[in-house]
Image (cartoon, rainbow, N blue to C red; front, side, top):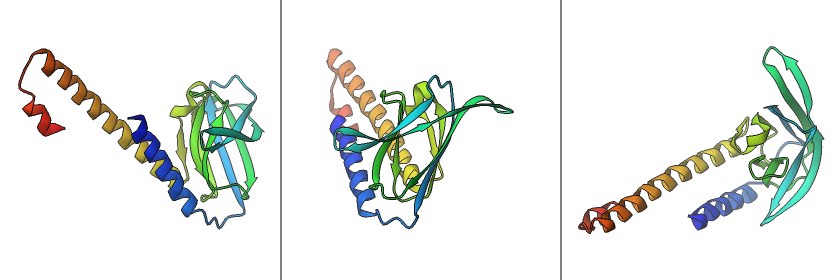
Length: 167
């Protein structure tokens, strides 16, 4: 399963790099986050298996009709390499993967402690990434169900031919 996820990410990374002809001079990353304890977020570039810090930007606490939340807005010169980036505090659950380089605007919403589950809008590339990850979760659930059915069938010493047809 890890190989399948890795293949999807590598494939999407190649697709992003092939289509990396950006027509915008700046990239605007903005967002509205809840439950933030820190005063800044980091932007990391996913370089193979390494995370390369690219920028640190402040977040501001705001109290308004939407409640207490943290907002940020950063404009980056579009000399970034198109590809996968992580925004957050560096912890696995506290970072969100985004694709930067092709879309002039990216908007992020979520909760700081679980930013990996945050929503990205305003970007066609990130929409495609989200759809691929959702489809991967569906396949992973189906695979887990099949494995559990197989285990149950082998314990009961049943005929496994009915499972073979679904695999």
